[in-house]
Image 1: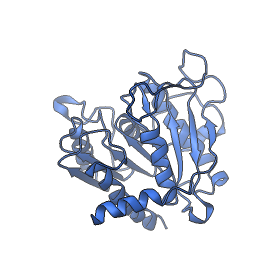
Image 2: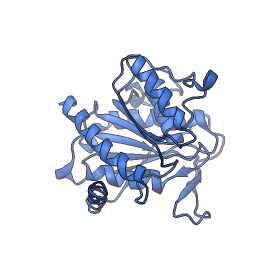
Image 3: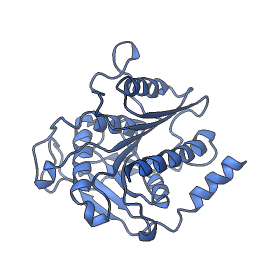
Image 4: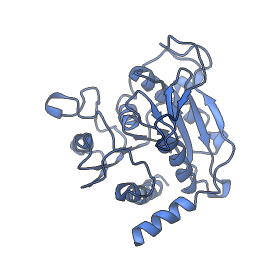
Length: 284
């Protein structure tokens, strides 16, 4: 009961933090590697499950969510919704997460990365997004060395890729922002997927974990069909002496976001809140 009441307090405390949202265009000119013309995202609610899905994105943007100035902690988190690299569960794993982060004092950027089936384009989008946030940090009163990335499911895969492939130049430089680093300062992976596609369900080979990989928080459940992703990623980070906090609950499945009614959904925000507080303390 105490856990549930604390969770409800965290949800209700963010209600007054949402303001009008800026849409930050990632690519001022042609989108690298994109064959379709820029257009507004295609949105579908056909599943009648209270989830707003983006089914096609050809013009990647980030939606900016600002905390109340008096609550701002000077840190930013780029949120990557999941959806199998085919759709984006945009409200459940994007907007709702950003509002919750605002309540903790974080400036949140929800990434509309390219879909469907544009995995390499998605990596370009998140790298460009991190660089733009870092370059324009003063605009949002955030520190350029306090920028994290957070992802759910396929968004967790994308966040892990951003955190390990930051030395790869994946697109031609567009402007001065591309001289900035695209390495996140920390990584949050909530029920990540596709991290165990190496031989024998080992770490996906493209994920080059080493001593420079940023610290990570990972949350998953044992009955999630993608549960091994959390285990192999945490093991790789541990072996590289990278600080990692792993939580594995026995039940909860996949795709719960932070909506009430699931113990997993009610647990990870509390654990992450404490972990982020420790990260903020260490950064001071």
